[in-house]
Amino acid sequence: MKLDNFALKRVITGIAFAVMLTGAAAAGTRYDDGWAAYERGDHVEAVKHWRACATDGDMWCQYNLGISYLEGQGVPQDYAEAVLWWHLAAVQGHASSQSNIGVSYERGLGVPQDYAEAVLWYRLSAEQGYALAQYNLGVMYDAGKGVAEDNTEAVKWYRLAAEQGDAEAKHNLGLMYATGEGVTQNFVLAHMWFNLAAAQGVEGSIKGRDLAAERMTSDQITEAQRLAREWKPKASQ
Image (cartoon, rainbow, N blue to C red; front, side, top):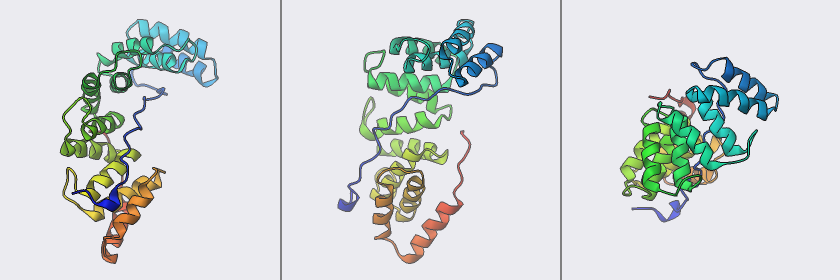
């Protein structure tokens, strides 16, 4: 049962696009030339280089060209064109592009709004270990958008994202532990996750941590603080 004094908001409005990638193992000279132009503020020249290698099928160039259309840098802003280039990269397995297509479907930017389609693309990316998509997929299960509401699944994906350092996922995981939704109620772990999220500036996390502390012994608080100090992010699985 949800506790009255834990009527905190989950972070469910932080759905965000992945941003421009600074480098890629498989990218070639055109990609690098594009990035050099981007860094010096010449977005038109960056787009010129990325379009050339994107047309040749380079998924990293396709991804960054999509970001250029998303942000209107070097080209007129065009969400549909952004999705087109991300799709070309996504079918090659590019996780950030898959996640961004999910955001596009969730928001209805460049494509008709379709929560079920958003879940499909988030899942493809999340299963590759991409933390932002894991968080977004957790939100979809938490809110019952595009899938049946399932707190256990929400916890699963929040945990995977939180373990990689996603701040909003840490907050939401703390709230799940505090309320016992989708997981056995545990104030020590709630305090730990809220504490970690608070350190990254997530709104409401300090309040959540302090509310958890009100229901804990001093030994439990000490233990939660130790866990937070010793916590280290994991690499994507």
